Amino acid sequence: MVYRAFVAGDTKHIYQSLVANAAIVVAKAFAAFMTGSGSMLAETIHSGADCGNQLLLLVGVKQGQKPADKTHPLGYGRNVYFWSFMVALLLFSGGGVFAIYEGVHKIIHPEPIESFWLGFGILAFSIVVEGYATFSNVRELDERRGAKPFFRYLTDTKDSDLVVVFGENAAATLGLALAMASLAAAYTTKKWWLDGLGSVAIGLVLVVVAVFLAREVKALLVGEAADPEIELATRQIVKKHPHFEELLEVITMQQGPGEVMVAMKVRLSSTLTSVQVCGAINEFEVMLRKRRPEAKWVFIEPDLPAVDAGRGEKARAVEGARSVEARAPAAAAAPLQGKRPKKSRR
Image (cartoon, rainbow, N blue to C red; front, side, top):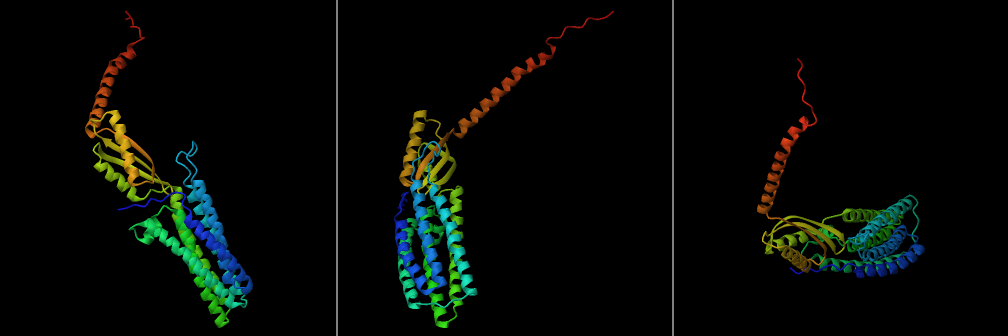
């Protein structure tokens, strides 16, 4: 199976979405001003929030590229997860909650929609641009996921920036469809509160997407195990390596997009010298990184074979028993030291 490694710092998909949303927000703002539509205003705010969110993601990717130092020996890769989580929070509050509030206001105080065809045309233009951005995200996800099912990859992937951008664009595309439907329904039926209902529906979509993104990114932010395929590759390489007898324990940790730490304890052959042990460990690291390039940090603790370990424990037990026997006479004689013999009285 050919594995396509994610290159940390790849921001092409973020810039694509940023340019698309910048064009859309200008068109939507003009349409919202001309029509007075609540759904259009909600979509304008949503697209504006998306632009801000993508700028935050770019900040996170830039900070995540900082080299490791004494205060952060495993690097700054989790900065991407922090800013991705912030984006999810802003999508929830600045996008979803505000859209629901605006929709409820329009339902209670409905207003006629003006310049319907202008607003509808701009929404149609926006959905084409947003749909293209979403399609580009899907293609990028397909390249990275390999044979894994699409929706399972969304929940398993560690590339939070791509998932956040895809979630935003997918929610925007669905929101535009809802805005067009509610705008058309309100205009044709003259029931202007339907426009507010569309805004509420858009807000609910944004809230659901934001909660999903926050849940996925939170797991990475607090420290989540890496892709199970990395542990599988580790076990397979250990099994085939001539000097490794058994993998006792392995721990993987996702440190950032495309950055994984692997810590393991292995039992080595008893015939190896210290030089050969170092050579075997170095050889294993090369083999693992060749197969899984994202394994940036590999820590290996060698262990004695089972027979030698048993002998070592037995030797320590015998030495302990001898030490106890040696101390026993001294301990028995200790109370008699310093005491004078008593004289008998006649």
